[in-house]
Image 1 (tube, rainbow, N blue to C red):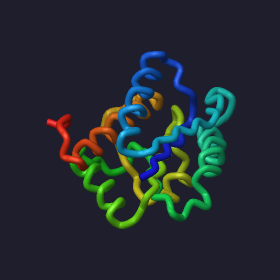
Image 2 (cartoon, rainbow, N blue to C red):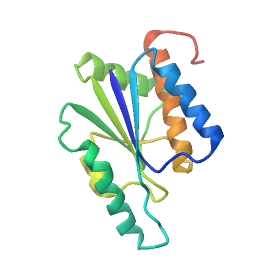
Image 3 (cartoon, rainbow, N blue to C red):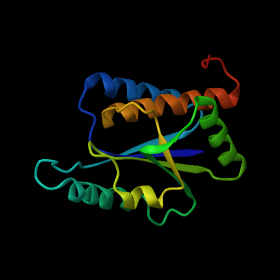
Length: 157
């Protein structure tokens, strides 16, 4: 399995960088993980819809033409899954021969509809609102938890 996280913006906070690096290292036991960062737009310089559209163009460069990839858009309007259900989804994809999953994470304003509508799954991490940098950390932790669940290893209680 290969996982790619395509995210708007760079992680600025040192504690998040350390946490993300830790979960990337933990995940490497189970799967390859690549994080691609695209530049975020200045949200004060233009209307929200233009910012999201510009960021979407950058994200879609990494998603278009990847028919073999299962694309998940992180979107607050998406479905919420328990950790067990996320693990089941990932395991089902592996069994079905889908060896690559791409997760698209938007910037401060979220994802443009062009990204959300092109995804195979719209996933919400929670009804709570998180900074987009924190969402990346939470996603990696949940992916690690999913692989522990799939393998029947202790971590998830």
